[in-house]
Image (cartoon, rainbow, N blue to C red; front, side):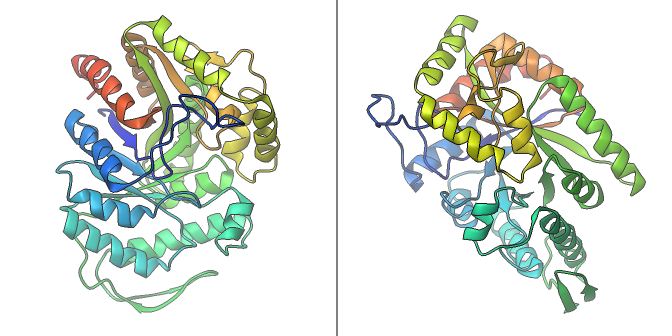
Amino acid sequence: MTLRLHWFMPLHGDGREVAKSADGSSETNIRREPDLAYLSQVAQAIDRFGFVGALIPTGMFCEDPWLVSSALAAYTQKMNFMIALRPGSMPPMVAAQMSATFQRLSGGRLMLNIVTGGDADEQKRYGDWLDHDQRYERTAEFLDVWSQAWKGKPFDFEGEHFHIKAGLLTRPHPVRPLVLLGGASAGAQRAAAAHADVYLSWGESPDAMRNLTKEVSELAAKHERTLEFGTRFHIISRDTSQEAWEVTERLLAGMDPERIAQAQKRFARSESEGQRRMAALHGGSTDNLEIYPNVWAGYGLVRPGAGVALVGSHEEVAARIEEYHDTGLTHLILSGQPHLEEAYAFGEGVMPILRKRGLL
């Protein structure tokens, strides 16, 4: 299956650093607000280079993904909006209605990234007090209801978290949005195997990714289903390998040691199995961050979530992407610092190579 490349929309703001320096004195530590003027530039770059679409994130420090996507749909023609949706944020029938409306208004350009949540503190800020396993049980029920609604016929549903009487989506769109679900825990894998179209995990080494796809494929087979697989990487791609690795040195120099220590303590408390796996790649140490050729774990020193970047010349990055594709991955969600410039660097440097190799 051909590779489907997605970019990332910086709804939390953008800049040239992985994290702000402790005193904010860095000349490169200028932040770009996630306003419509800037986000539309990123979206149009995604359209220009032929990315399938973009992940539109959700979180306490992000703008609302539904509202931003609705606005950006008018500025673009082709890109899909992979809207991140928390099952605890709205009833599944409301989500189905919103999804159908967005499909009609955008011309069928919606994808859903189901975010169950792994940070207990953030979940409680949203008023969600379920524990980790309960959240994945709720996610499974949510997707069950959402999928049944898409059939356009009345139905009842009795679960632990949702109770539906004569549920009906009166105007389902002919194209049901693709559902992507991420997570490294057993609960996440079970939910994805039973209900998702694509299973997502944060990027690690090719061998680790190959093992994950094998495990989840076996789970899906028990439900007589097949899944696609995807992952998330940051990208630092330059004309030469030396130029790319010099960027990592600059990024690392901007990470305050105290901030690294604080971040690692926070990650250690995380309920997210994926976050623990990211932290284990480097153990909080700035040594040996290249965990595999052209695979750098430096982002995960201070930043939660996906902590790994593909680093190198355009040819090297393309070769590594081809290797990951050979493990069974068909969806790659990519990002860079800042997102606009890096979309151009990747679009002009790496994507022509991937097209020449027949991957796109």
